[in-house]
Length: 531
Image (cartoon, rainbow, N blue to C red; front, side, top):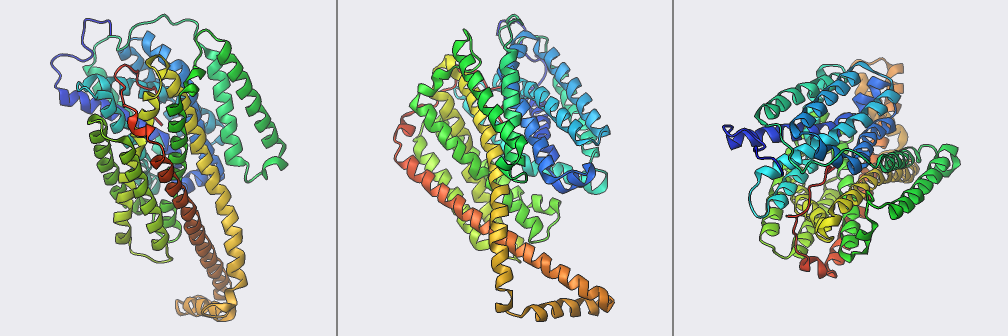
């Protein structure tokens, strides 16, 4: 930092500064999963498919991931206080625009713009947060706190948005997010001096082409993984064209980065064995983490909870993430054996998925899920930030930005892949289990006619006319079959994820180099994005 003025005004107490930074950071985090916090409500309001809602989330993510390669230049050039003001004004303007539109294609574009601006807000928040942490392992602590927030983003966003959606139209959540940004931004803006947090650099020769190539490629990856299943993959010309375009853009980007004097991504990072190891476990972790969303779906689709109640239970998972993050900070600051931390974390994740396979049932008490959800949070908190910091520590200081860019690309791709895997296997197991249930329906407790008679009698006892009760009984039977099919899918998919957790534990056990790697981020700049 080249300025003589401090970043924050001298008379402002430290607790007020930290609160202001966290308020802006939390508002930025809320934006990430805002469109999918209540997918059914979003689909109904916009007249869209669930896949469209998922794609809107990935448009935001693609923008954040691709803009990170050029955002650092803006952060270093513009006075940080002015940069914050610009980002907040743009974010509020885009959110207000989202409030007034109902066309899904326009929502896609606006979510992409939100992602670009959010990248800047995240960069500001992280740098300001690290500037307040004065300990020797400030960045390790800061990243652990931030990634802990990311692990809790879905339930926190749902707790914020579901009460609004239940009482107002869906678009009101965008107005609500404006009122989250305004007070937090005013607080932070009021306590800052007009200084450059990073060394000022000229704003020229920005590698816009890398941003354009990366953003188009990431959007196409999201399109293929989200819509490929419903469009029969290679039977659809748009999917084939998108895959061919992805391969072409990847080849062009690769060749271009090799020829540039100052590439956005230094490909030499792949020469590090530890970097490759970290990337592999990052992919595994995101697939495992993606499967966790089925737990909330189970609460809603099988147990019949409303969205608010289902996410209130996730408070136990949030508590687990906090506990796991504290354990991770302890290990990282004391330079303890990292391999022990990873094995313990993945073991807890394995225990969660096996436990849930036993708990999944058509009827269950919510108190049975408190301990498993807590253990899942502890396990995720213990491995999330250490894996990211292991990747960053495995490359030289000059390559840290490139390592961060690769990590962002991998996280985006794996997050998209986890959504695609759930969509694919849900359809696969739905057909498999549904056929089995229908074939054996007459062999279980009651015959088909007897079961329909039970449903019909129950409806008649509540005053429904006989002809309507007969039709409704068939609907209830189909609904019961769908519920049982989804339940079987959850069990089958979690069994597969449990196997993946076990494989991860074995791989970590045979990699002693993990514990020999010293986590050191003191001379590395914070990544502009952490999602």
